[in-house]
Image 1 (cartoon, rainbow, N blue to C red):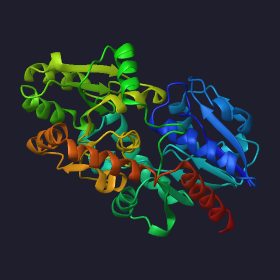
Image 2: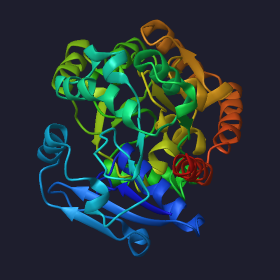
Image 3: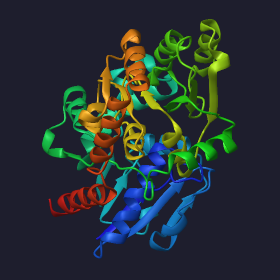
Length: 373
């Protein structure tokens, strides 16, 4: 079976979607003896396939991606399978489903935040995504998601039959594992100047991640704990307003911004942290939660969307709008040594349930299903 696949998100500074594309493709290419993979990318950013480059020949069209999408939307040509020399299945890994002449089509929907919580998302995302997503999931022969939560959202908001949707959860990166705490502490201090102790938050600085609630919760705790609040993630929509809130709350001097952190450096940040705070309003999966559990970092998280599917009974949950509850949950982890040890043990056990091999197998089975229809 010949598989065309969108590898556009696999760049040198790849984030969540790029990591999904890279690892599911890597594990499929290694595990499947019956499939040949042909990558496709557009735009000006260079592709960084690394060790899987010999397994995935690709074509990179240096046309701006938005322009190519507009051409496909208006004209419906050229078929993406013709651009890749003919394939049996084309996997659109990042929402947008291009036209094909003959190939069956599979689309990955990472989440529906732009429909479920449009006020929390940039208008640049809400507008085009909301206009097109219904057509894409309708025209696709199969839809892949990370969680049962997103599957339910697609069924409810887009009126798609459950049989069309496959849940294939992500996993932490290959090699993502706990470091000895003393080593992690040294690495974090040397690289970021971040000293013990600290509370960690991982994710883009934007309203959907509910950083505002975290700032308010930290303001409640600041006089009672010696911790810094460390933010790992790039700046997103309305990040300036969020940072201004930290100033107004008088905590900006206790907030450290690490910026975008490559995944290879995240284990040290998790292992040296006392707790991960993850009060997001909505997640299609919540990978930082799984990464923290893998590294033995206790988690206090919002009890919505896919987050409980990932953490199970290994996290403390709060309502996303409950600032007092968030502050209280963090305080419990910081002050209760026995609770912390229990959470670390449960977290590592929970994390072992997720693997890229399982994600790859579910994805390969989806390809086989659509070809056989």
